[in-house]
Image (cartoon, rainbow, N blue to C red; front, side):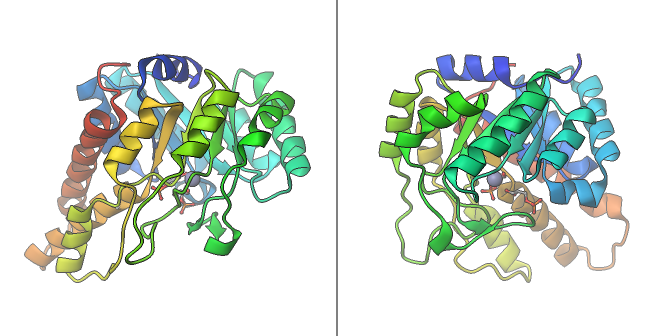
Length: 311
Ligand code: G3H
Ligand code: 13P
Ligand code: ZN
């Protein structure tokens, strides 16, 4: 089974009222934990690589690790570039074996976003690769994504049809109130998503797959463990799971999860060292970290995404 694009995955997910998980990968343990869970549950899978992950782990290592996961699991896996910010980065990933790329032109004005996205689509489609675009800006801070609350903006549904028609993108990320990282709402703020915007986008683009970034739930159990064992993450809060389930039953076909993976791994490692302060063999603390990732991804697949048995 070679790498696949997300085209068929999204068609089935849209019709079936579920979403496919897009998990960020940075190393072998993360890839193993995610793919072992997906294999057990026969779930379709998107593994995504940010430019930061590519710098950290090296393009070839990540591609080969994902290819190894396909051999081990027999699952259809889509390998996706997360938040590509230039044509050159997208081209490099397309030439280097990725089956899907995101060109994130959301920080440009509409016309410049259309122009850049259309250029990536033209290159990608002629090589059998699919493209995700973005309209609207999510708040949050990651390696390559740094948007203040004031600069964030919801997607304007009146623009989506023209954007999709003029660019030819295969899926569209929209901003409805999610944000990147582990601090998605201010202390005391009630978590809320603009389902009215999602509904309007769905009405204007019937059958078209929508993507939700910044969709970690920042699972309280992990935050509590981190804080219990020497960490300090006060006020960490994510998207409630019932909201993600609702989005998955609507036009959202791809749900991006990175922060929850980081928290699962960090919680396991902090706990391990608190209980075994003299240990120093990386296999000893990376094993529970990998197990936690597997448990987290099983939970996401069955309780949030609803894509178990759909591979
Ligand atoms: O949305 C961004 C992802 O969480 C990737 O984060 O750029 O720190 O690898 P990163
Ligand atoms: P989280 O920070 O909510 O996990 O979002 C990840 C993401 O959107 C990757 O593109
Ligand atoms: Zn994102």
